[in-house]
Every structure is written in C-alpha cells, then in structure tokens.
Picture 1 (spheres, rainbow, N blue to C red):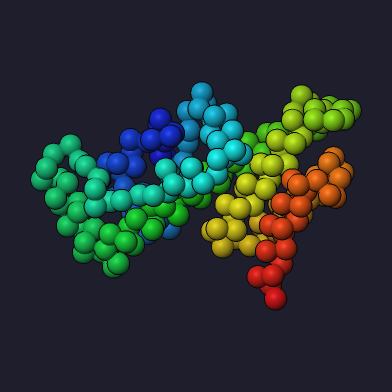
Picture 2 (picture 1 turned 180 degrees about the vertical axis):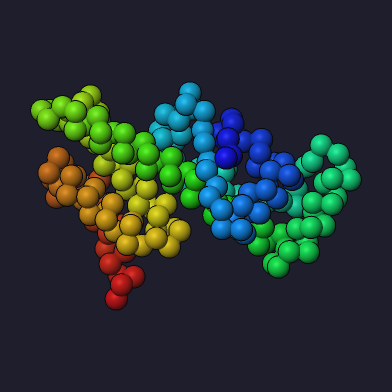
Length: 196
C-alpha cells in the first residue's frame, strides 16, 4: 500500500526506498494499492476534473536518479541496484509511473462508483443534481477524465465504455451540440479510429 501524502507533492515519490519498493511490486506482478488521505480525495478529484495534465506532470514524472534515502550508503546501494536492473533508471521510472497512474485510476473509479451509488439511492432528480445529491455534470466529466487515463494506459476498450456512457449522459443533459458533449465525442472518435 502506497499512501500519497500530501497528494500534490507526495514524499514517497522522492524517496529511493519507496520507489524501489514500487518498482519491485510492479516487477513481481503484485498489486500496488495507492491510497490518498480521505481529507485530500475530493481535492484530487477536483484537480483531475480541472487540471488533468498537472496530475500527470506532478505525480507521474518520477525520477529515481534524483531520489534520496535517509543514509548516503543506502541511497548509493539502491541506485546501484536500479542501474543493474534490466532497463536501469528508465525502466524503474516507467514501472513506477505506470503503477502510480493505475493506482490513481482506481481511486477515480472508486469515487465514480460511490457517486453512482448515491445517485441510485434517490431515483428522482433533474438538472445538475441527478438524485442522491450528486452533481451529474461532475460525474460525466469524471467519466471523460478516467477514460483519458485508461486510454493513456492502453486500456482502450475500458476507455471506450466510459466515453460512451459520458456521451450518452451529456447528450441527454446538455444536448448534442454542447462543447462538453462534442469533446466527449472527439475522445470517443479517437478511440474508434484506433480500431481501424
């Protein structure tokens, strides 16, 4: 389990031992569970919705070569071990980035699932509040962003399903000519183009 705290500049992603352990988890095919403090989860989702690229830049731009350890000799030994892996620093950085992205994606999916659960608790509602006190527009935009994350990880079928769900909801809520609907349509068409 990796606790990203504070989530905007998590200490574990600057620590040699933590990065080595993330890499080892990925290399062994074990599950890496990424967790945010509950107090920071809403802020993460809001940033995901409004500044997706900042998340990718800050959390997924990992540089093991510049990481630090508590003791100089430990740092040196970890970096030597990294150099001796197949692919060296580039491979370890890539493994860590993919592990973090997958973990963040799971956080977003859980958040979406919780939104849908709340929505299902109350069958009535219209406008932005679709029942259960949730913001439907936020839910649909979250589907878009999660679709982008899935797409960037090569999980194209899963991305397509989210894009289709978001498109259907946006067409119903905003109409087919709204800019947000058209953005989702563009994302979906990019996915379909990959199939050709």
